[in-house]
Image (cartoon, rainbow, N blue to C red; front, side, top):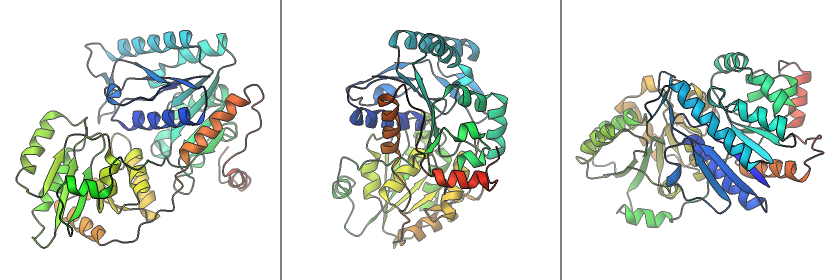
Length: 415
């Protein structure tokens, strides 16, 4: 059985980390599975890949805060770069002949680069099945609805895709309702739950020994995810440490992220060396070990980071990114309202506000750990059902299907 995976890759590490976690779980759960992953992520080669998974690296595209796409490294314009990527994807599909294609986020890919491949597979390999994976929140409803209408995504899902998997839960964000999915798309949608992150390789005591914490010291972990836009968060945190007295027995571990620009990282290192109780790492591939040992986490609100916080059941202070997408802001607000963590809007972020929240969370012994983290198992189950019922996959058992039906009948979902 052959699975072709397309990973959206224009900003940060979130998408590739999420798709790799899904691929690894599918390989464990589906016997005889072979996966070819296609991505432009510049750090894909740095991950340890399991047997059964290989990848094709596309030229990098970058989306900055202005939301404009550019070639990250090549001296080519964006249209040339997308054409090159599109040709590589099509060539891979022609030769690999996948039984199933799993697409991340955009039904036609970045700037429609996936469309020729989808058209080819439909025409030449009509038995191929297609699954679209969406994270819990894409952007604000207004922006997402406009984008999906503009690019024909609603029609694409109705026409091309067999399943739409949502790695979230409706209690936090009812994606089909918020984005006004038509009934034909709702009928393909499954809420799978969030993705649980496995425990780290090290026990908390090992981490505390590594960081030379005393028995009564508290550990604050600061992580801006991939780090491309994490400078302000870390700078604010380091500045805030000056406000703490010696009675606050805190040690801080700051992990900048591999995507942080080198000039930003160097500036932060210069700040950090003035604090004896601060350690700074550029990157770790075992973040869950450090999160497991932390007393409080300070982070941004990317999907993967939030899943790590929820999996570790840690008190957290979350500062969302607010441009070019409002995804993190919406996520942080919804989860704050349900008591999963504290949040600070970036416009309200000051050293004193941040330190006040950190101190409050250091004495917080109650963490809401009720969120559904069964995403990987449900994704595997649904994809397995496509492979095992390849020609008769018409009846679908929906997670939360009763709620869907009630919402439609009550007029809560616009169709």
